Length: 57
Image (tube, rainbow, N blue to C red; front, side):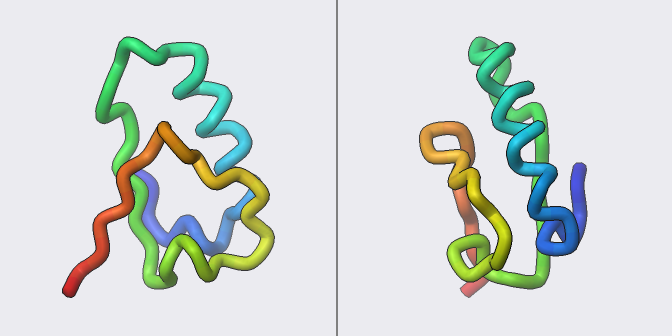
């Protein structure tokens, strides 16, 4: 579980590499934060096809 990921935008590059190397494993990470993923500054990796965003209503 990784919390407050908006403070470490460079982390997404590493997460992408891990997920791509182990495509047969789902649910490896739970990523949380207090900012909407689409609004995060400095995030160059979208994790498209690798993550499912869930937002509280």
